[in-house]
Length: 331
Image (cartoon, rainbow, N blue to C red; front, top):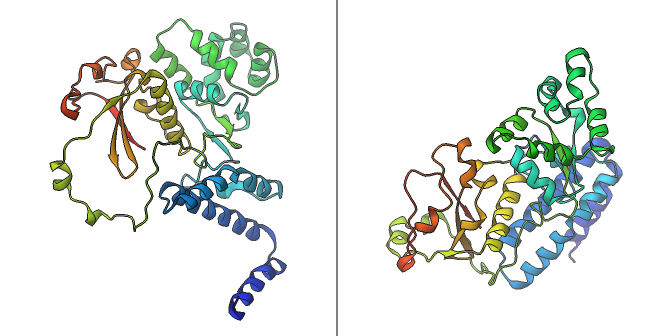
């Protein structure tokens, strides 16, 4: 090691002696986030098998690094912005729609709570919750300050903050599915979920592939591509996935959206029975899927789940009906 390199290392080691308070903690968090983002790039665009394996190993254990930072008393606000959200070991919070909330509770049992302290409009509960707890109606008409959390705890028979019981009662209401969603969404109930080392995080949100594409040369730029040349190529072949494979892909897509605080009708209610895939090279696959037919009343011009089954899969061509709502994802 050269003298200049040794001096740089010593300077780095000595720096904590002269750093105090929140600024130091923020720098630690920011450095950890930068390391995380770099690992994601290396895993997504690996130059070699060794880099791919090592980046995957580090990401699989990354939540422990975040846990150390959190246990040190560091303010975790640096992990909240949309640009860096979804890192393993952190906590996320949002007022999700009915269908996505039910999906999340099923995917992360015991890790989703109601963030009561951030509930903004309690009056909305008074208009809706008596449908779930009939005895509550009298209190809503007479009491000014209703202990909503205690009512829910009494109704579900425990003191857990989980929204599971409430979501199940909404699902049992004798009203159309779309109406259940609108009724629940009107409450804007904030949910908080703990990622820990879950695959529902940007850190570990990946799936095994048959073949990894290694980028042993610089990434291609926009100027390196030609739309005319691409359109002149033979269209990719589309393959209809099995129901099980389709459900796995739809879960993956919802996870990708969720960690970025995104929620779209097409992805939340994507029909796992009708997912098709096209591999277009360089490790990229395109997935196309329609929305669930029974929920089209909540969204105009929906694509019927059986419409995709009537599309053409001849000579590698796929043609969907025009002016219909559908969705696509690149993975």
